[in-house]
Image (cartoon, rainbow, N blue to C red; front, side):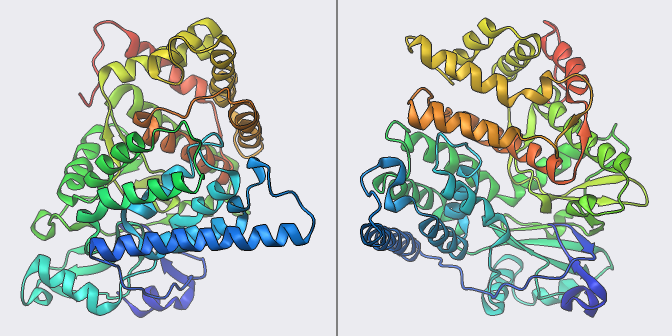
Length: 478
């Protein structure tokens, strides 16, 4: 990579799994060795638990000294903002399945994690430290074999992105192809199940999760999906599949996979230039541009859910680029892609239709079918669940363009979730099978709000619902 792309000169810094960005100052994070053994990773999680316990003791002493109450569950000393930051910092150094689970849980709502922890863990997507160079070279040698350097005319040792599962390097193949190489952290794949299980146990023992949450079920679902994310051959297949599915969307760009340089632990893709999605929020960007990109993102979300039957579930800013000259949106990362069962898609199409129609009885009945409530639950719980669903689906019920940036829906939804779920105990934790869908739905709302998009979500989703609910209808991705 040219010097200006790695050192930050000329105001340029790269971003995203397969592309570069311009104009923002580069934030330097010191490399840190990735713990590889299961024992080493368990020790890191145990240290996190110890730090939380000590932090709770310190906070309790502080509150006693200040004459504050230490008995209320909602104000437990363990649930302090300082403890939340300690946990996030430890997971960012650990990386892998534990860090990824922390990211996902931060998007599950106030009924699952205390607000301080949801906020701190939500910052994890920007905090991963890259591997030290010797560890990186060992990974490359293991995957490509001795003399791996000869495969490349140039390999930039400084990563252009670092996340929970791996980091990304720009390279030029010996035949001149410009590439982005996603290199997985060593030991991550084989430790995912134990990472997720151990972190879930810690959170439960320290009473950071509601007592009714099925930790084992959440851990199993997270481990299953994260195991797929760690298989770069599977991601390569999803990348190629999405390229076919969006071929009729000329403003969507998907990088090509280079299979001769792709392994189970290294994914080779086109390097694509573009601007970071966040720059759409900058002064001077036309509202029409923001709305157009927001509409692309929202239409893609609905097509994934109701037409394709397959969904990329991680709407992280770093997973997109936009190209101002063409108005195109680049889709970069497909590791967190899931297949959606037809019955699951139909249930969501029906409940979405009921929400738009304002049919509370149908919403309540379908909430039970999906697992947000259960047969035999008190009427008050089912009614509360219906209230939450109707509220969070506000953009779909709105007629015309919904102003995501001006909306206070996240704070209203959080307040309602805390009141109904924590104070009154009237909400069930979301079923584990919805974990990744929720990450996509919540993350997409926040993305559109951040880029200040106004989108007519109702008009986008209605034709897709009609097709999904048509008896003989078939999804394009089936």
